[in-house]
Amino acid sequence: MNVEQYDRMKNGAGFIAALDQSGGSTPKALALYGIDESMYSSQEEMFSLMHQMRARIITSPVFSSERILGAILFEMTMERLIEGIPSAEYLWNRKHIVPFLKIDNGLLPTAHGVALMKPIPELASRLEKARRFGIFGTKERSVIYEPDFAGISSCVDQQFEIADEVLDSDLVPIIEPEVDIKSNEKRYIEEILKSALMAGLDSLESNQNVMLKLTLPEEANFYADIVRHPRVLRVVALSGGYSQEHAVELLARNEGLIASFSRALTENLHHDQSDEQFNATLASSIESIYLASTQKITR
Image (cartoon, rainbow, N blue to C red; front, side, top):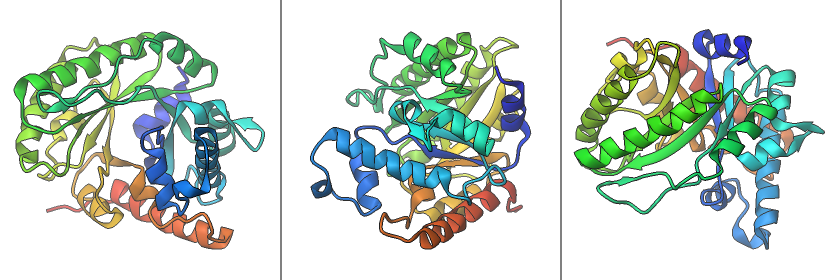
């Protein structure tokens, strides 16, 4: 493990940029960027356009280690080049931004109120590839829709099982059991989830440290015990469909949480903006997310 990257993730000021839209979410991400499905005719073209968008963000002069600690990549992004350099290598060597990799294969159909991750039969080879490309850590996502004890327990168990394999590969896992922000019982879900996560964290060995990516909670500082847990390197927050303005407002209320936003980061970016317009829009987003990650509201 890269000790400098570990120290940066543990102690650095800033946030993580989530640039890991996969096959299912790519069309929507491109549409928000002003590229609709009529503008490409194959999946290969779609992913090439998505890579161009990500590369434009990453190479922007405002996308720097001054505000950004890390970036989460999709596997195809990791395998592609930015300015002739492998993406993860570009992030660290050119930008001093820690690279992460999304490792899940998407979600199974919802059962018992949760959408578990699909099987990852290629996990071992994917983790080995991540190490070869210079990846520091991984991210794995499942989603919780209802306050079903059995469902949430199975979701958290699956997350920690995958995390164990990631840790055995000398990578740092980001555990992401997303809570659906549209649920009418979101607060109750969070209570059940927090208990299950604490049990999972308590089961880790003294040399096993993880990160968590959690939906912004209904109650400010609800995850404070998780933030302080000795096995937790960092807790990051997903925007989950909230607007950038609302996500930033909620994040600023939670001590110890930093952002790992995707759509809220790229909000208002458009493919036909001039470089000056694009960079100014991105700079504004980065600044607001950075401030919410580092300057908290005390109540």
